[in-house]
Each structure stands twice: as structure tokens, then as C-alpha cells.
Length: 157
Image (cartoon, rainbow, N blue to C red; front, side):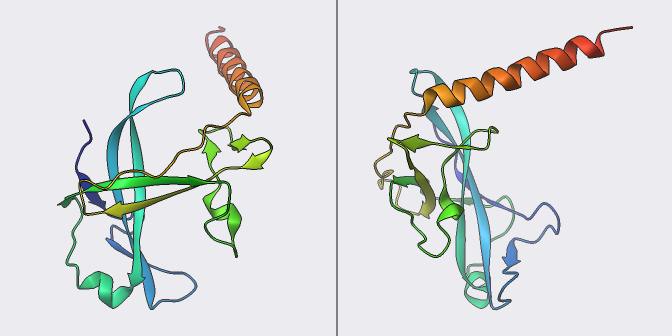
């Protein structure tokens, strides 16, 4: 079962509205939700996802949102082989966990975007299954070996 969507304060400042570094007239509010997801192997696990409410700071203030506030609806996920942001396509690349590796399909990068919807009946867009599985397995194996080596080193003496 999915959790409610929650308003999250900025970890550094504690502010709900974060001003844009490029233009102080604009900003965003971060929202988070824990959703039950099913991975490619059919394994069910909860996953935290987030989305940003973006707009003019004055309009964001008019929402009167506060940290911890629960909102109706869901955070929705959309994926595409075309960038959502043509000026900055790297912004929405789908990255595999902590590997830093971009998920691809037939050599093309997959782009992922999230957005908040107050409509509880609205659903995610189409998701795209990545096919660079061998590359990701190798990265996870390397990471697993490094963790194992560090644990063995920590247990010496």
C-alpha cells in the first residue's frame, strides 16, 4: 500500500520552499511518497520517490504547505526515450541505484520524470524496461566485492 504524499523541508535550511539559485523569483517544494513497487524479478519492496512542485515563490507561498503535511493523490512516474528537457537532457536520466550507470534500451538512454497529482485515480505513464543488465550486474558485483573486502579488512586484528 502506498503512503500518503508528504511535504518535506529542505535538509539544510529547514525551509519548505527552496528558492532557485538562478532566479530568486522561482522555487520549489519537495514532496515524497513511499510506494510499493515490483522489480524486474517480481520482488515486492517499498521505494521512496519524490517530486517537486515548481513555480513562482509567491504562488508556492499561497499554498500554505508545511513540513510533514500529508496531501491527497500520488507521485507519478513517467519514462521516455526522448528527453523531457531539451535544454538539459542529463537532468532526467534514469540512473540505476547508486551505480551512477544510466539505464538504456537498445543503447538509448532512458529518461525518467516524476510529478505530483492530487487525483488519486491518475496513474503512472508507461515505464521502459532497461536492457543493459550485464553492465549493471558487473557494477553491482564490483560494489559487492569492495564491500566484502572492506568488511574483511575491518575484521583483521
